[in-house]
Length: 369
Image (cartoon, rainbow, N blue to C red; front, top):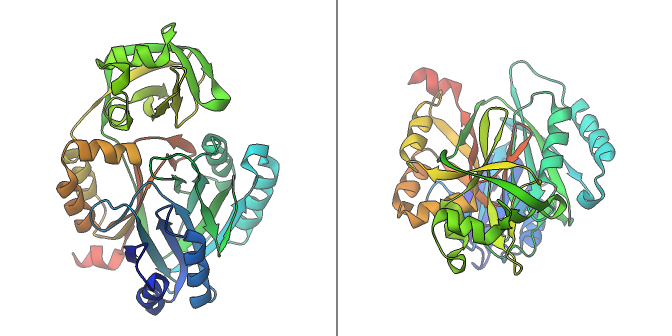
């Protein structure tokens, strides 16, 4: 694993020097939107022949330490312990589900199951495509209970343009699905820090294709949401959204429907799908780190790495609570690396304000301990 500031001279050379000795089968690159991700990926591909280089722009980065901005995180998966394949899922606005399924099935056919090794999938999606639910469900339908985790590419807090790259090539309005096989034991780590309050509301008017709520409880959406959380409309910002999430109950479980922004007309644009008639509950924050540490201590052994997709709004809530030092310590102790997202995917579902990670555990180290 390597990281660095995007404006450092010779960044690609430094990354190659740190990653090259591992002879990686794949390198994942998560970078600030200003980092020149495509050029970095091209340079890594040229310097690491035969290595798949997969990456996306982010809303923040972290590499076994505190949250960063304006940096580049590169994670190498050595060929001695990993096998990798990656494909594009193109034309998200065109809803090319049949083509995606054909490509996914062909990819799966190239990976004959090996009972002695673990398989998992990595899904990166354009975070402005508004198609994460469909893509995640499509992959889940083809992957036959394969653990699949991922994140929506970000653009800081600008929400203007994201970038995904595979082997030095970038495509707009697309997703990347990577299939991996490893001799590490793997374990999913899913965590959010909210529970439902007694405050409930109904979406009385929405535009689903725009992820836009126009009315809540038959009142203008922003005004009613502000009233329910006890602040003026002018105080609605990403930190207020992070601390007061909207929860939707599905299959006996609550999922966050994060708010992206207030529209000029007083609506609320979300980071996930929403429909008229949906009942929502206002979430309240639980302890931001205590339960999280307990979950990490319960892992089946010391992690070599926890590959992580962590929502930007969860990060904002942690920073607002003054927990940056605690997060840096936990991320360092448990070797947590990845990027801040516009949404997270796991189990065929698109969620928000959730820590979604995959821990790689060394069975020999666990046995020795």
